[in-house]
Image (cartoon, rainbow, N blue to C red):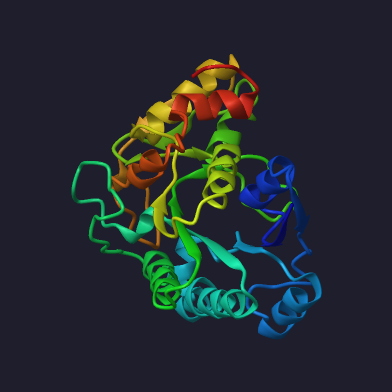
Length: 284
């Protein structure tokens, strides 16, 4: 049984890992006891628990706030990730950290593979790419896993409400939910990402991976499908990304390909199946 120390255990991915990694002994201290940026407490937690695997599921992922506070973005998403990776290496643990589709600029119009050249256009994307590079420079037993548009249950109450939850929680008579129709991504159910990570840690194929629900889709079509599968929710109207003013630039096309996962035989379900799994259905 693997011993897993989980940072960010109350977020969407952390909650899914705690629920689905049944063959592991998991320690997931609350943020007040173990913050990613507190190297002293992290070292004490590692020395006390002696994990086989250290999972970093924490981040400063408010994309617009990262533009306003780039120092914090780099401290949390880059420097602290590199420091955590070094501590994992020093104690002999495998390290897993989660990165993002926002390391790309969205100019290709086709899903990005692991060998695609990154070119972030926001502070958030820059900070996450820097975190990737700090881990990769250590040449250690580590998995750097990019994902996209994560949704799912969150246990700690700190996560911002996801787009799918806003759509499904709408009450009759509420104004339509405006969703961009010209931004294409790979929205991913946290449970499916947790399953893929569980498969990865059973291998020694360390490196950079993409792990998303398969198939590119616009956010508008994604939300429409979620409402259709749920049998009710918000009325949805399409808008252009130009109508949505945000502090941070966002890639217009950031769908990812799971090329390396596929070669390992770890197959991610489709984005429609991700919605179904979240709703408790059976769509494949």
